[in-house]
Length: 84
Image (cartoon, rainbow, N blue to C red):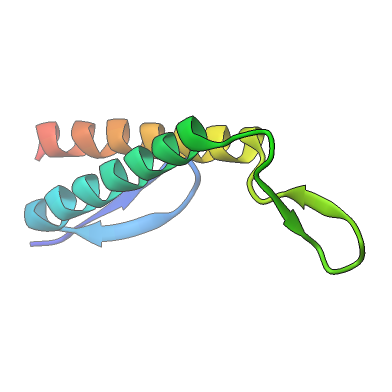
């Protein structure tokens, strides 16, 4: 039977235990991917904007924010699984 869960961000999902296990693995993969991207960024990783200017494709702040988001999600899902 599916239960309703709400992340601290306000997003609500309905999931059973199998769904939670799939969701935690998915969020761990996202977290690993962002960590890999952050670790591989070089100062010259810029993308042309098309208007003569260049910009970083991903800012460190954006990636770190995404990592914090997925770290929090993993902790929340772990808590839900423990209580299931």
